[in-house]
Image (cartoon, rainbow, N blue to C red; front, top):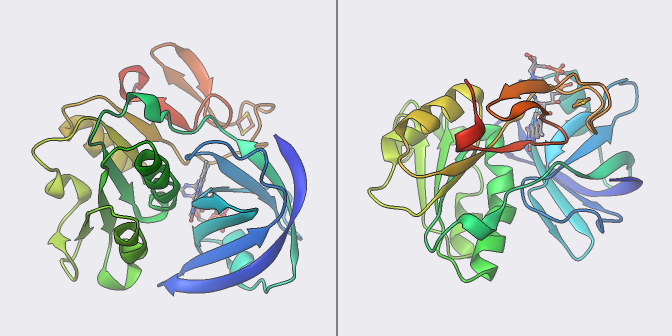
Length: 242
Ligand SMILES: Cc1cc2nc3c(=O)[nH]c(=O)nc-3n(C[C@H](O)[C@H](O)[C@H](O)COP(=O)(O)OP(=O)(O)OC[C@H]3O[C@@H](n4cnc5c(N)ncnc54)[C@H](O)[C@@H]3O)c2cc1C
Ligand code: FES
């Protein structure tokens, strides 16, 4: 974990209420897709955890949904502003068990970590495909970015305004070697129930400290209590208790 300062390079709305921010700074501690950063925003006591979407050449990309006061304040930030940032948090996804053709399943604010994961799987010579789920067409983002790196994408929208009508679980393919998922908890539970292979789930729990000190994110697993911020946010299917 590193406590450092990042500078905002850009901050743009890319879909309804959804912003892409690029930042420059010390990214040395960011080592795996599925890790997150914890941002100290001016005027807010608790840091806000956001997944790493991409990290290359000292540039960190995050994508966040403006859902409350903290993320609304982030949406107003401009290039040149600084953010105190904890980096290198969380275990991240383990790609060594993915097999040849893993499935990436992202829902809404759970889509961003799937992008860095896709890049890593491709660099390892694997052939990932993605299902990206949203509420409506104007909330859809990153379809083209996944396709540009060679990942076939199926979009689902709850109202059918783009892609397959319904939930990510309505678009599961017949065969895949493994899966990786991130999204709201009801989606994760549905993925757990409907998938037939093993897989890894990233839980975007509410957090306190974000680095293992407060126990505010503790949850029960088959292998005992785990802190989502430190022992997660990624858990394997076999250890999860709903
Ligand atoms: C490991 C991790 C990674 C995350 N990655 C991303 C990401 O890449 N992009 C992204 O948009 N968001 C992500 N989140 C969620 C993000 O941290 C919250 O949306 C953010 O902290 C809300 O701050 P706020 O001050 O705007 O909202 P608040 O004022 O704190 O809350 C506003 C509303 O949002 C709800 N809310 C707050 N936090 C969460 C949460 N963690 N999960 C579900 N609902 C919440 C509250 O219940 C409330 O209804 C992640 C969370 C975790 C723990
Ligand atoms: S948020 Fe403090 S221990 Fe996880």
